[in-house]
Length: 294
Image (tube, rainbow, N blue to C red; front, side):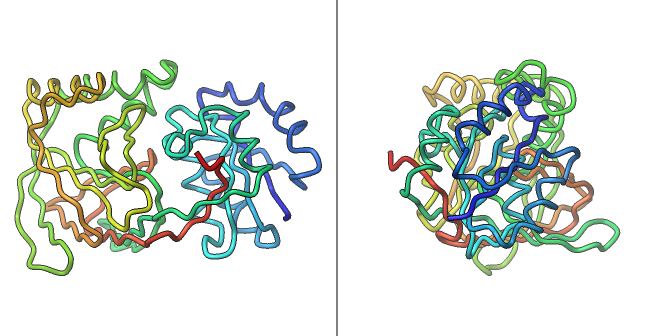
């Protein structure tokens, strides 16, 4: 099997740079090449040019994995996960908790197929695009929190997301959305936050404890909570007690969202601006990942 390693040195506040030699040494004889990214979007560009490889080992966080799966051929190629990012949600789904676990998975032959979110969107300039995602997407509160964490709080490491969630809860603003599920008639909803998850995790915490990444459906959370209610919910999630949840939750496999005014969209930690239309379809067991079989 022919492997390429893509390493993002900016993952986890550039601490990843110190691990380059360790990864190279441990993948000697397995990975034919390592390419270090130099700018945002570079991992996607590299993956697009890597069609002659069977597998891509991703040394980075969920944002780097997001770039890679949007460049690779997900029907043919496989990925290995070397978790050196901030949250490492996909890695934690497979209990790949550190570099050693990730390297063992790549060297082994155990694989699992996971669901993928397929997004199609239009922005305020009528540009259209499509994306694949493995973890989460959101509008409103979760997007504002992710944006603030990425721009202002990365120095806090794994604490950047809970800190951002607490700060941004002060600034929650409700917006109107038209939402339809599984081809049914759209319904108008007033929300300050919309989250769609393919995983249990959101940032460093388990937001959907019953979610499974290969069950053929995604989880949806709609919120319109004030600061106090949102803070209580955040606390219940941060502590893993889930004692309070003011949100509406349900599952689906096809969803369309039209905000009354353009909204920023967060996808696996990356931000896309001024989205006016969004459709989300669940593609069952569409991406193959090397795991340790845990």
